[in-house]
Image (cartoon, rainbow, N blue to C red):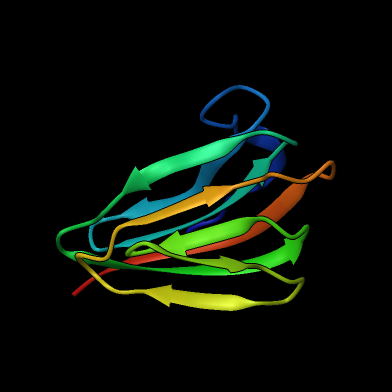
Amino acid sequence: MKFSNEKTLKFKNETWGSKYLFAEDGCVFGLAVLRPGDEIQAHLHETECEVFYFTKGTPILTVDGIARRVENNDAFLVEAGETHAIKNDTESEVKFTLAKFKK
């Protein structure tokens, strides 16, 4: 068994972005915060699918050029090879959990 506590970990960009509670070969689990105006640029994972579960806020999630307004408690599965981005174009903080799995 492994243990992690998010309060002991730093965000990728100090006060926002992602932080991984677990990062094992083939499996990553973490959370992310986007402040108003923050954005995760478009990117893809060749061999990993990624799951997002949004718990706070209503950002725009774009997958392969198709944009969708997220609502609280929405979950998305982005397949390996799909280009995706998340933009917080609102005045409120966005929080979500994420998991990546090798295909």
